[in-house]
Structures are given as structure tokens and as C-alpha cells.
Amino acid sequence: MNVLIVYAHPEPKSMNNAMFKAAVEALTAAGHQVQTSDLYAMQFDPVSDRANFTSVHNPAFFKQQLEEVHATEVNGFASFIDAEQQKVEWCDLMIWQFPLWWFSVPAILKGWVDRVFAMGRMYGNGHFYENGISNGKKAMLSLTTGGAEETYIEGGLHGDLAGILRPLHRGILEFNGFSVLPPQVVYGPARMTEDGRRQELDNWQQRLRDIVNEPVFTVGAY
Image (cartoon, rainbow, N blue to C red; front, side, top):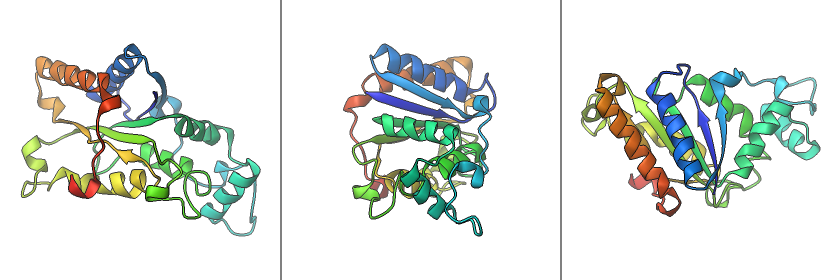
């Protein structure tokens, strides 16, 4: 299986970095092909504008989606955008590794989506959800939280995590055709003991060893 891991955390000593490295190790050991996008190391610019393209559809008025469709037709994406798009097209499974910031992904990861998931290339013309261009591929969120698990349940301080993640699961991944695997969540790693963090990493690697056989879930039912 071909696996793309998109990693978004600025600190090399973080739990997210440990999970990123553990995933690469476990998947490679299991015989999978792995590519990565370490967004902070790449200094990926999340700002979407005409720099996305080498082509120009309308020089007088910038409409990103129309420029994306045109770039798809004429091979007009900037080389660094095209390289990321090729990774997404190559993979069978895409994993996002990130800390939950403001109930969403860090801006650098959202900007990666804004620039890479281009209309015409990744979706559009009736190609979304079950008819999406990425139909047949799987995706999974792997994340850490600042709060404890009991704060991310229905009636908890922050509300249920499924509702928080729904815009990512449904609005980005399923919209583009991906089937979604249940998220991997580490709650409050900053408050864990070293043994506790090690156990979370072991659990993560154990899950990944058999990830090819893991069933998808329906976002609305999670």
C-alpha cells in the first residue's frame, strides 16, 4: 500500500513528531511505501494566490477555482503544488498528523489543503463524495488534544470530538472521495507520564501494522 503522511507541528520534540516518526517506522516495517510532507520543515506557505499557478486564465480578476480548472487543463500548477498533488494521487492511504488547534487543523495544514486540493484536479464536474476523484482511497486523522478525553464527549466542556472533526472528515476528506478511517486521538499528552506516552506510541504502531484490513466508518454515525 502507498501511504502519504502529512505532518503539521513546529516542534521536533513534540508528541506529534514522535507519532509521525512512529508511523513511518511501523508502515515501512510492514512493507508499505511511504511518502511524507513535513510542512514546517518544508516551510510550506499556506497563503493561496496566483503563486499557485504558472498559467493564467483571467489576468484581470482572480477566481481561484477557475484558475485551478484552467491549470488542470494546461498543466499550469506551480511545481511545488504539483509535487504535493502527485503525492495525493499516488497514495492509497493519506494520514494527517497534527495538534488540534482552535477545534481544527493548524493554518499551515489548512493552507496545504487550500492550495493542493484544486478544482479540476482533485474534485469538480460532479466528482465529489461517492463519485470523487479520490474514490477508493482512504484517509485518517491522527491528532493530539490539549484537553482530557472527558472534555471531548457529548455534554463535556468542548462537546463531542466527532462534531469537532466533522468539517474535516465530511467537508474535506469525504467531499474529495476518500473513505474515512476512525481517527487516532491522543488526549492531553503534555499531562502524561513518559510511560503513558510510550504506550500511546505502541498502540499507534500496533494499529498501523494491520491498517490495511481496518474497516472505514460513516462520518454521520461516528
